[in-house]
Length: 158
Image (cartoon, rainbow, N blue to C red; front, top):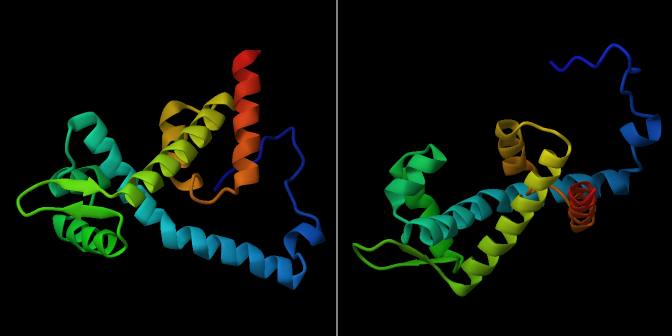
């Protein structure tokens, strides 16, 4: 449980923020469901792209180790990514991103970098910023990302 600092008032929401109109509330939950549907795909595609870029190849064993999952879990996800046209492979070879997969990886990497820079600009420790950015990158709108980027740039230039 997070304890608020002693000097600040309790962070309560006003009624309009706590319970917005039903259509707006439904939109909020729809956005979250949509983000949940794509976040794992984006994480795998981003990792595959990073492994290719930094190690020259993306092997299932490396993905399993870095994601903290079994190779069977990776195999199931790779089959899903192949079905979506994001990844390709050849027998006894590593994984490759399709053009569509490369586009998704680049977008995901950019979102991740913006959120990570923003959290660091707020003074969040590197370890915590990395953990938080991994989840947040999937759940912020383009408008929020742009604001995060502006804030980070302003902090870095001052």
